[in-house]
Image 1 (cartoon, rainbow, N blue to C red):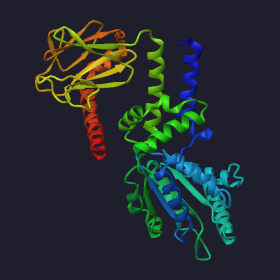
Image 2 (image 1 turned 60 degrees about the vertical axis):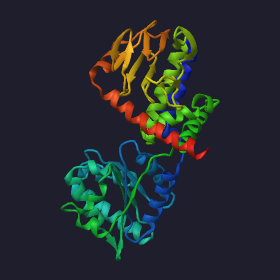
Image 3 (image 1 turned 90 degrees about the horizontal axis):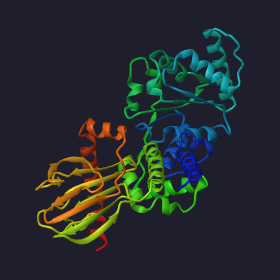
Image 4 (image 1 turned 180 degrees about the vertical axis):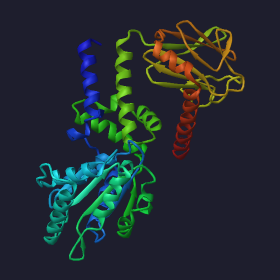
Length: 394
C-alpha cells in the first residue's frame, strides 16, 4: 500500500470515528440514544422540567444533549454550558450570551438581575428557556449553589427555567447534596444510558464508515471484527470510536508491512494446517470454537492466544493445564519472532514473517500482567456468548 493510500485511510478513519465526527453530523442513533432523547423531551414538557442524564465517560451523553439542544432551540432560548470546573460567573455569562442578552462588563448582581428578567419574561409567553449543563457533577460547589438558585426562579407560579444536567453514574445523588434543596423540590427525572448491543455495534461501525465516504463497510468491519470491538469497548460509543480507529490503522499497517505473518502447524513433522494472521486475535486450543484448532489430548480447550499487532505478535498462555512452550522454554507471555516454535503436545506451530517488536510495544508487554488478564476476561465473555449462539442454532 502506497503512502497516498495510507494517508487516505487515516483521514477516513478520523472522519468516521475521530473527535469531531459527531460535529460533522455522523450520528448513528441506537436504542438507548433514542430512548434518552424521548426521555429528555418528555421531562422538559413536565411542570417540574428537570432531567438528569447519566452514564460513564464515552457513553454518548454529549452527543445526546447536542441533538436535544438543536431540538429545543426550535421553540425556546437554550444555553449549553460545560460543567467541568464551572464557576458562577462563567455560568451566568455563558447563559446570557447564548440567550442573546448583552452583558458588557456587568457586575455579578447585574448579571443575575438580567438573567432573572429574561427567563421570567420568556416564561410569561409560555417559552421557558432551557439550561443544559454537561458534566454538571464536575462543577464547583459555588456554581451548584447558583444552579440551585436558578432552579427556584418562577413566573406566576410556573418554573421559569427548564434544566438538563449530565454526569457520570451517581449524578442522581446531586439533588440530595447540601444546598440543593430547590433543585430537589423539582423532583428531577433520571435516565441512565446503556451501551450498544453487538448488532447495534455492527450497524454503528459500518454506517459511520460509509457516511464518511468509505466503501464496503462489511469488508472493513466483518462480524468477527465487530464482535471483538464490541467486547473491547463494552459497547460504549466513545471507546468504540477509539477502537475502530486503532483497528483501521492496524489494518493499514499490516497491509503495508510486506508478507503477512503466518503460523504453520505440524504433527510428527507433517504439516496439517497453515494460518495467515490477518486478524487481531487467535485462540489456540482443543475446543471447536478455537481459531487454531489443535486436536491433542495434551492441549487445553482454550490453551493459548495470539495477539497480532503491526509491531509485534504476542503469545499468551490461558492458564492451560500443561503449559505452553516456545523454543523449548515454558512461557506465560512471549513476543514471537520469525522461526520460533510453539510446542503443544505432539504439535508444533512455526511462526513466519513476524514483525519486529517496537520499543513502545516492548514496554507495554513488560509493564504488567494487566494485558494478559484483561485479554483472558474478554476472551471468556466473548467465547461464552459465541457458544450460546451456536447452541441456539443447532
